[in-house]
Every structure is written in C-alpha cells, then in structure tokens.
Amino acid sequence: MTETTVGQRSPSNHLLRRDVRFLGNILGEVLVHQGGRELLEHVEKIREMSKALRAEYLPELYEGFIQNVRGLEPGIRHQVIRAFAIYFQLVNIAEQNHLSVANATTSVPRAKEFNRDRSRASCKR
Image (cartoon, rainbow, N blue to C red):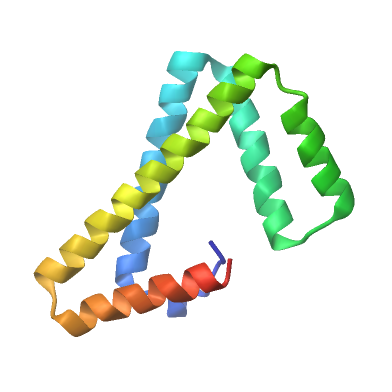
C-alpha cells in the first residue's frame, strides 16, 4: 500500500494496519515453525523486492526478482506461493472485519468514508 502522511491516515486505517501487521507476524512465526527459517527468509526477500519494485521500477531489480523466484526449488516455490496466498487471505479477512465493525458502530457516512479511503489507497498502488 502506498504510504501516506500520518495526518492523512484515518483511525480505522491505523487499526487495520496494526491488525495486518499482527497477522503478518503470526504468519511469519507459523512459517518458521512449519517450514523453517529458510522459508521465512525466502518469503521476506521476495516481499522486500516486490515493495522496492512497486516503489520504483528498475530493470535490474526486476531481473533479480525473476531470477530469485525461478531459482527456488519447486517445493520451496510452492511453499512461498502458499505463504503469500495465506497472507492476502488474512489481509482480506482483516479488511472485512474492520468494515463490519465500522458499519456496526458508526453511522453509514463513516462506513462510506472507510470505503473511500480504501479506494484511494488501492488507486495509488
């Protein structure tokens, strides 16, 4: 997600980011427990390279990214793909949870503001 200044973040976005970070940390612990430290290191390297490419596309970084993924053994590659799939499922669950909380505890205009903020963030990706 594109970083915004602290003044632009709504409280609901702050809470969502906190929950996503929390879930990501738990997923990291599970990856280490189930697949070992090496699996987590592969996932983290690919994640960092992806973030860097999203921030600024550099052909040499892209080529390194592709070579990194291609260089993984098929079993490890499968586990890495699965880790990212689980991460995005957790993010979607957190978003749904925050949206339902926003709808249940605030007025309809507040929920629309949450959706507007989320739409703006996805447009900046």
